[in-house]
Amino acid sequence: MKKITLEMLEKFKEYLIEDEKSAVTIEKYLRDIKAFIRWSHGKELTKSLVLDYKAYLIQNFSPASVNSMISSLNTFFCYKKEYRFKIKLIKIQRKIFINKEKELTRAEYERLLCAANKKENKRLYYLIQTICSTGIRVSELRFITVEAVCKGQAVINCKGKMRTVIIPGQLCKILSLYIKERKITTGSIFITKTGKPLDRSNICHDMKKLCKMANVSKEKVFPHNLRHLFARTYYSIQKDIVRLADILGHSNINTTRIYTMETGDIHRAQLQKLGLLIC
Image 1 (cartoon, rainbow, N blue to C red):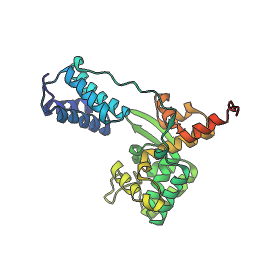
Image 2: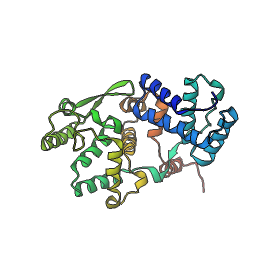
Image 3: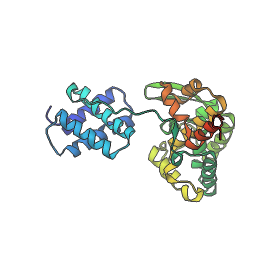
Image 4: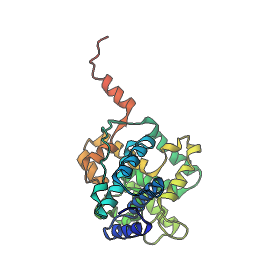
């Protein structure tokens, strides 16, 4: 293989579909590989070229992003059985706390809800609470249906895995009123005017509109941060990371640990409580 062609990418896409990869995953793989093609400017594919690309990524992106893009390339090389072009991921020491500037706090969450309420955007008002009180992914919102609300639980079938998500009783009550008001008789309840389930871009766009009124940084406002807030809140009360992993649908508990990280300020306060400093 001298170059990666668009025809190869089309066949790779077909392979990923047959392998039952999610649409989001397929889009990401193709986007990352196309970025490499643009960067290489038509040069012949060699291990040296791929290593140069790795160096470029390290200089311009965060370690996590670098590894994510390398993984996409490696997946493609494995598909083509061109193992000689595979490159190693960079080693990242696991963080023990998150960046304060990226953490959505409980107070900020409540201000976002207040802003949605003031804007009389009931769909967004209930949607935010649904994600944050159940911990589901934004891609799983389509499984919050009229039928699921009636049962008090939703069966999530995503990424080849199935799990049951409990919908809290109080949330069922307010969603039932919303369903009745919107005259939704069946299927997903968070839908567009044409009846299609809301997608990630729709939701992100609507959430960003709340930032100014809620006085919350746009960097913190996106659906996945609601899932993180749910995880931190659950863990702070229950202290059961294994159970939390099951609730979030994680197959690897190390992934769940990322969700339960607190800010550096909280970590600092915990260290100070040890009482090992003698002034």
